[in-house]
Amino acid sequence: MKKNLYPFTIFILSLLILQTACSKDDTSPPTEEEEEENENPDNPDGSVDPTQDPVESADYLALKALYEANDNNTLGWDLNDKTMNSWAGVEQENERVTELHIEGKSIMTLVPEMGNLEKLTVLDAGKNKLTQLPQELGQLDELTQLLLRENNLVELLDNSLPNGLTVLGLAENKLTELPFSFQNLDKLEILNLSGNFFEVLPSEMGDFDKLTLLDFSKNLIQEVPEELGQLHGLKYLGLEENDFTIIPQEVCNLEEFGDTEIGKNRNVTCNLQFYQYEGLKALYEANPNNTINWDLNDTSMQSWQGLIFDTNGSLSEIYMSGFGLANIPPEIGNLRHVSIITLRNNGIEELPAEIGLLAKVQELFLKDNDLKSLPRSIGNLKNLTHLELRDNKLESIPDTMGDMDDMLILNLFGNELTTVPTILANLEPTIEEFHLTGNNITELPAEICGMPSLFIETGICP
Image (cartoon, rainbow, N blue to C red; front, side, top):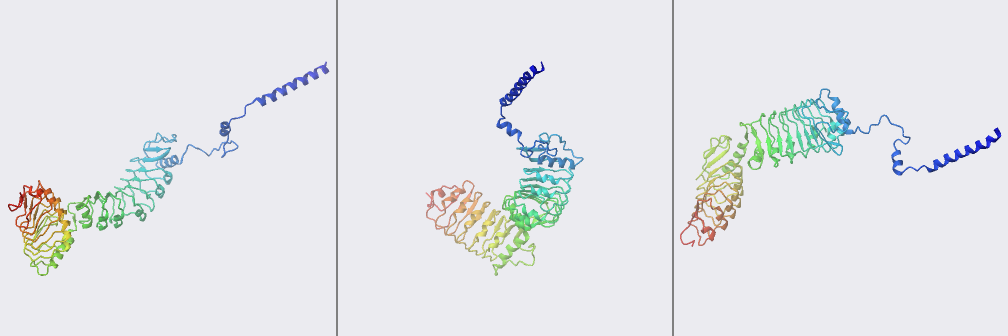
């Protein structure tokens, strides 16, 4: 019986082996996608690396370090949210932090790890308790706005400010000086250093030609460098509440002849005295036979006859007729605050081009001189309302005078004119009196003849 079972057992085992082999052959091979999913070049054996956490980005770790370094902060961040999407004050693009607004969050320190926020463009950490900045901030090449007002910063480490900054707010801190590397911030457009303890305003500030706002108010500054006068793009220069009373004329010119508003205390004046003195001294010395009798040792000019100064020390009016002032030097352009000039009967033969710099002149009286021509720059005197040139020797006048839109009275009586530029008709309708009588005119343009303000001999105009 046992012998009969043995062949049967062998047969059954053979069937089982054959079935198993067929099952293996019928199994589908893995797809390319499945093979790629199973491959891990960094971990070919498939083991788990317990030290690797792919969701903890460099930005997350930097801000986590900031959070943990400030025990009493009021940031309110949930560190379990490693996407940082729920974190107030954190703005991201393409999973990178681009703006960080942590104003008034009881931050005592900014950590070195913040130098890893490579895409950060705006950092507002104002109204905190910072005393220093990590040098690593200087690595943030894309940071353009750094706002740190109302902290306790006492110094700025060299190279702690990135060179790409366009806006830097450091108001209401305890700073006394700027680091040497500050000179590299040549892209700055807005710089607020008000409310600190600066005693010196660096002359190098004059090199920051992209500045539109510069605020050094509420400091201890004792002198304003004249180099600031190079900042022609400034819209506002804050200098209030400091320890100086004089501003260089070069700086004042930004406001007087440019678009800059200068904030200053009432007792602060421009350093006009020197420039005015030099201009008047040049006038005196250019006419050695004058009869003015000024004492040039009186640099205040208060004893000099024929001059009127306003309460700010600016020369506002000149009355010097018949003093033998035949030569008017270029330095007359220094008298830029004058509104009235009377120089009748002096034998003046020529006016320098610098007369056009006296933009505030409203009344100019030059009767009874020997002028044969006028500089084209006289057309720059846009505020002129009265121009008296009667009884000179003028043979022509420049067409630029047609741009004097405020002109009320233009007196050219008794000269040697044969005609006048047609463009003077543009003085209508403002002009009230236009005197051309007593010249060598035989014919005038129709536009001039049509001016209601014209005074001319009969028969010249139809």
